[in-house]
Length: 204
Image 1 (spheres, helix red, strand yellow):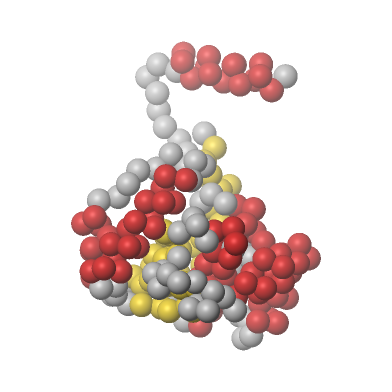
Image 2 (tube, helix red, strand yellow):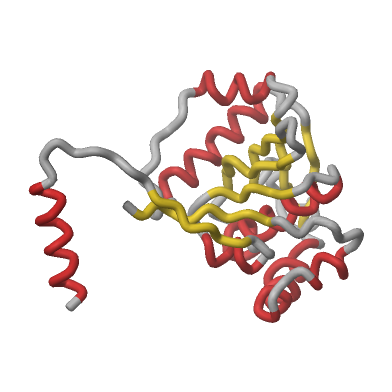
């Protein structure tokens, strides 16, 4: 069965913003100028090895926002203990985005990216939490994608695993989508064959 595509950024040998833009497609460069670079001045971006108790609670609340709004993936809410363990691990870090004081009265983060760096020097963008009140006005998601890639480049990582879903947005920042399939064995595949036939009829 087909699974969601996995997106990977593999070109990280650039040294400045112009070099990053050269790795993008024509549409990607247009998107970068219009939807990312234009909004970057609104943000303060901080990379943290660990969040304090209040920050962690807010980050979890932002993740719940994404969980409740992302209908592309039928996911579930991870237990608080898992977030606490990520916070204690030296392999994990948090890219935290704030809207600058002159543009917002809120001092809380509008996005938190939960990122992992493994022993093979691969950076993985695993989870994200976002404040949807700022999503459209300030392009929070697109800005977070860019800041994750910038961070991986600064760490001289060899690639960035961008995960699944939002493939179109990730392609615009230079990610390559890789198809994935899953295999499983069913003792009774009658229901599956009926579903497949139904899909085929609907397509016709």
